[in-house]
Image (cartoon, rainbow, N blue to C red; front, side, top):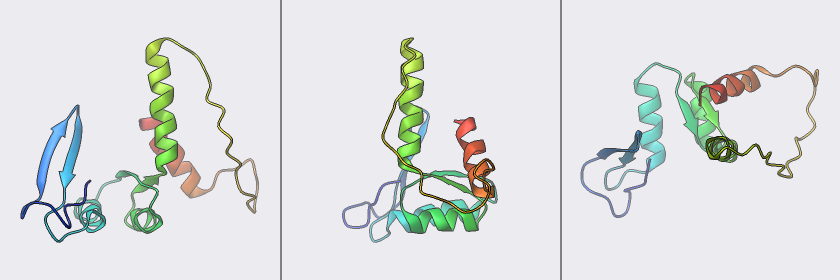
Amino acid sequence: MFDGWKGGSRQETFSVTGGVAVVYSRLGEKADVLIKRIISKEKREWIVVTSDREIASYAWSVGSIPIPSEDFLCILKRKEIINEGRNEDYDEEYYEPQKKGNPRKLSRKGKAVRRALSKL
């Protein structure tokens, strides 16, 4: 989704490039509103790639699964390496914050994110 809020067309524009749907919001409409409308309209489990907390929270509330942009980028990089025939691991310095509960058991949201990532 792309913002057409300040300089877009009067109509939403939609195209498919490389198997990816590209949607521009119409003039005066923010992409966030468009994303919320799309994931609310069809009652299905969407995978929403976003680092926006408000969009992620909304996605959870309507039964969709938000994936952080950084995680999605790591998946793309891993697939690119596999496609090139290399087997390198990306060791990025990311430290998981301390959480309560059993550290060996994923939360419901964690399980949903893992399931969504496995589909990509």
